[in-house]
Length: 252
Image (cartoon, rainbow, N blue to C red; front, top):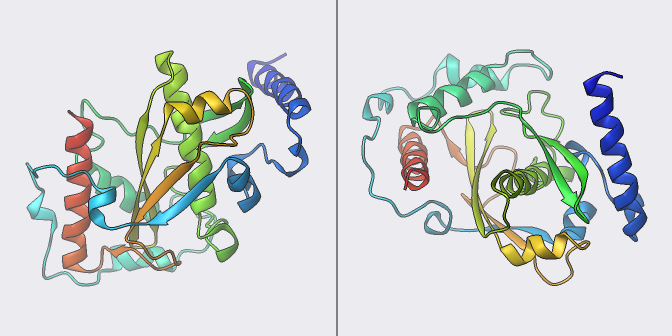
């Protein structure tokens, strides 16, 4: 038996154990990419519009990449071609844009590192139940529609899986603050999640009944083409400011 097959066999057995303990397992998806609003409700996760101050760390900006502001560039082919690519393109310009932006903000420079497409698992009853591959960019755009709240439902599941991985990597349960960024074409939205130790302790014995997770969103509006537009010089500055502050908070 190959390692790959053995991994999924073990995961399936763990899911069966967890499902036997869940009262509404038939409504609970095991793939983060297939999460629904019912799964979010079961895990008591909600999104909330917020101002910049509640999402972006209050850090003094150092080493701001001013040479990338390009104030005279309003719209360029490299920015807007991403809106014309059909779903499923192997190497979309959206992926290049995201990679370049994180590199410019030094979020992929030592000691920080952006790991592309890692796999994580969300544990319920201390059994691995939900498999999440938090993609660098969702190239198929299959989740960018009103039913999935323009990808936010998948973002929620991946944030939880990432937080769970942090706990297991560190060997202890603790309060966490996590940041996420959504790219849709040239529009960028920032997210901040604060997940308490109490939430994870409750999840270890079943679905949470008392504690919950609130994921704050900035800018607050959630639409397909909402957020900060990189085609605007002023909003490019806001994006780079936010990324720089996040990097500096991570390096503390």
